[in-house]
Image 1: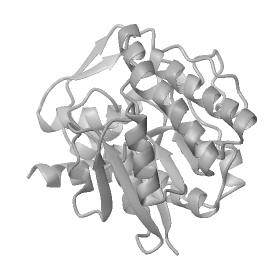
Image 2: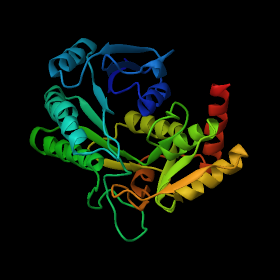
Image 3: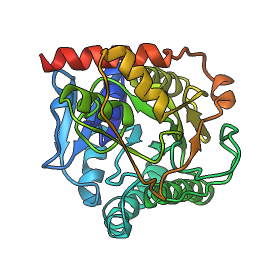
Length: 310
């Protein structure tokens, strides 16, 4: 008997890679995306695609009933770390509040709710350089991080009050194939895009900000292990457990590309934290996994990007 999974936001960079990693002999996969969403990443994927909006909760409930959904993977967010208050208000109306309604449906129908939060912003800033553990306080400094904290708190509230079966995943900074090279988020992808177009790479601050990076295939494999292991009612960091500065990333890309990079350093943004490395001891106590070395991952991503451009 196959398990029926619904991905809300499954056509994006992370979602499409998660779907690719799932064994189609074990799962029937349904994806909900808005009418105007880019869905090319789902090409050649065996999925049931529905076009509609998360804020149309009756539509979402109809999909759940028609497909006999047992697990929901929530990946929707319209925000990025640089988003402002007006962006946040739209997020609350169109994503956060409808998701709270969706959680009530999941609790009533005994559907497992898996939420992709953000290990990169939900913890906020602090003075030391120790890795963040799942039990550390959430003190975000951006509207993006605040939205993730609000969603997590809502999940825990629904678990306490109506028995929602949940799993909260806090990934670090995923990178790799399928990521938009010409967007505004993800230093590895954006820098590769600038290199391919022979353009300047813009860095906020002096490049010393440290982040934890994970190749998207590794994230997807860990996700599958958690789903197949029926891991639930907990919060988990998923990352490499090791930090690299923005300048490290650019140095690696210089080596991999063999090119002199055009780097422009701008004033730091108040929404960016200085250090973000995830403690993964809890995850390692639940599943066994290997992480691709960062240099190898950057080389693979760059080579694939060169190939897709040619």
